[in-house]
View 1: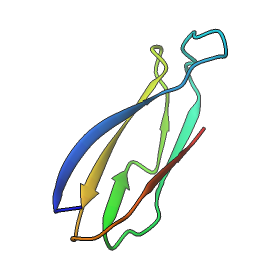
View 2: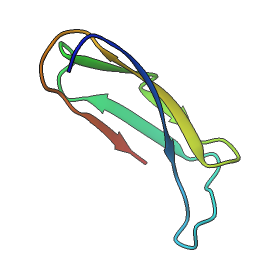
View 3: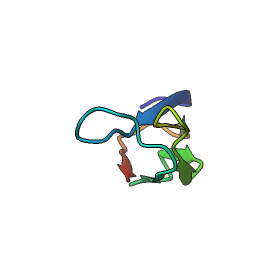
Length: 68
C-alpha cells in the first residue's frame, strides 16, 4: 500500500436483494500505522450504502474489516 486516499462504500442488502437502510456498519483497520478508515461507524442510507474514506499512511500491508 502506498500513501494516499481512497473513497469507498459498502452496500448492505437483504437476502432478496433490497437495500437495508439504517443499518450500522463498523469499519476497523487491522494496522492503523499503515492504513486508517474514517468514520469508524456509519449508518446505511435509503440506498443501503455507507461511505468510508480509506487512508494509507505508510508503505506496507494492511486490511480493513467491515461489520454490519
